[in-house]
Image (cartoon, rainbow, N blue to C red; front, side, top):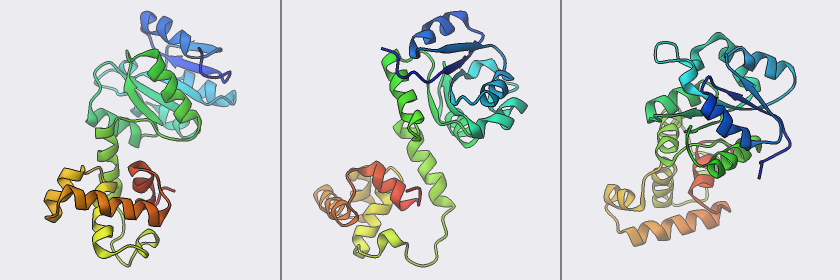
Length: 209
């Protein structure tokens, strides 16, 4: 079933891909040039799924004038036929709300659009970890952050590593403790901070929510 009555702009010159994406929403407009982003925003719409092949390797779509003018006012799911962490990082830093495989299952694309329509981001785990590491590298290191005040020193260490995407095994190896101990510390962190999972922890640690 279509995800939402909210209109969707599909931006691609690939007619087969456009036909496939028609099933993502009740109301779909097909654009073939980046300038369609400007008109879509002016008309008060938000949701976009775009084929990154539109720009080509020499002139990436996210570097186009239309993208730079309009991306901040839109919710763009950027789709690539050959996704990579480097491309995903570049397009997310340029203002996209999500990054996925252009030929992924329609159910997955619908879910991605639902997520970005709610104001969240949609990316794979590896890219999310890289994005969080980038944010982490830019955080000030002075003083104790609000989220950390109720935690022990070891809980803060475990929380920080988990928040940048490290697995329990990696955290255990880094800190010289067992995975069981890592799990115990994370359980205590979640309880003290009122969180349910690692994503919520990552967002809290990086000051996103």
